[in-house]
Image (cartoon, rainbow, N blue to C red; front, side, top):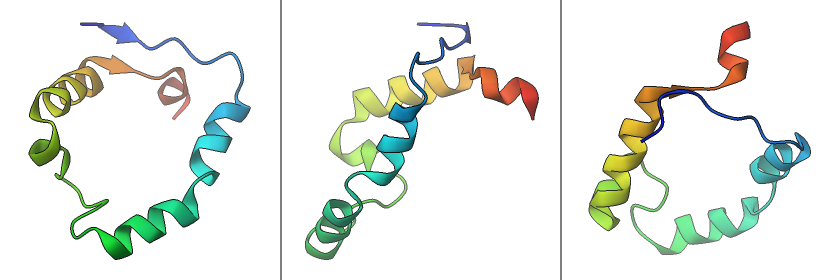
Length: 68
């Protein structure tokens, strides 16, 4: 498990693309699948991954959090 600062991505455009791409796809899934996109659904679908992500989020920080 990693502790400390996460390494920033070399291309900042990837984070912008990740936020904008697939908006229609997510909206369609939310209309079809009950509970899609709701907080806490990860624990039901993949508890092992959800546990790892929770610990990772608490033990690391982004470089952008230093400037807040």
